[in-house]
Image 1 (cartoon, one colour):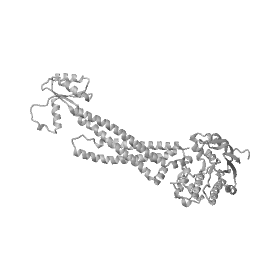
Image 2: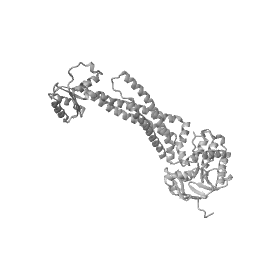
Image 3: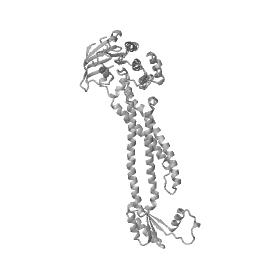
Image 4: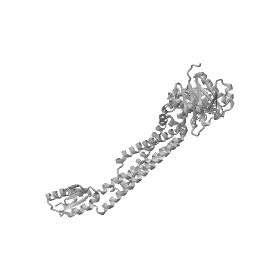
Length: 225
Length: 286
């Protein structure tokens, strides 16, 4: 296993925001294909920044990020959409379109990928069943409960079956049962598709329940991996 | 278009607002187009006042007439000289008053031959008239006189003020349409952000708004055209019946112009406005 080339790699990555906040400092990390990883640490540890560097919402101040042999930290702007099309991201603030229906929100990644309409509809229906939201397909997002919105956000990240899933605090503001259901969906997806899943969390209970590698971040540095 | 229908079904007010802004802007523009064309038409009515008529003394020999005509045609301020013989003058008189040959007493033709002189610059009319009066073969030299100066002032005033007003209206139209389009795109800012984070290219995002912009421009422009057409048709009919001797622009003459301006200008304004607004939002995003 030691000789396997990493799927995702952070090489001496530092990120300092224009405000002067040092979010990450000299991070060296690598992830293998198909790994289920918990990025653990308190608020402000740098978990969200780490995920944003993969999604190219941010660029490192120093160092490089490599994904599948591609230096994504230095990727030209015009290739960023291509990178994002191959990722599944669950954002901390969900980033759902509130005035759209559940069905329409799930359809977005497929429309971006120009999946044939009939196939896309079929995939959305399957995802609704998987999320147990089949009766809420035509409901607007603004009418959903917190747990349902979170599930929808997870569904939107997984619907196009990406090879890499990034989940930023997917259990935030959820009760224990809903939180376990959401991470359960991600775990099931990882096992089924062999996708790499990185879950940023500060919930220790989840680490105990779900098997996976744990990377601990503290004040922008990797404390344990 | 699927994004457009999604937006339209959730928030139709923005689309309606966009169409209405283009509609009203185009109607205002149409009124000015009509005004400008009518002003142009007025020139026809004034044409008679801008022509010098010099009547020859009865019995002037043809060779003398020829000589004088050539002399005047050679003057630098003269644009055109036309000889009107006695027969042509009689014919014009009959036509103007809608008379027939029987209405005129027989015998000798009482209409004298004349020269019609058009100056290069209308301002030179009085000077030219004075010069021609000095030539002894002319019995009488007439033109619009003081009216010419007033008509010229009137025309210059309308073209000048009209031009400024049209420019002002055009800027106003651009601002109104631009602001409404920007407002609409800004309202969908979160949707654009989500699409971008899902990996939509700028082209895909622009395309999702472009169809809406084109349709908005087309609908607004077409409505303005239809409403303006009905208005001008009946308005001109009314004017033609009430003031039949005045020169009114014919609706058929500017029908096509109105259609092209309404549909294409609206489409272009709406499309360019939409593109500019979407690009503005995209530039601000990571």
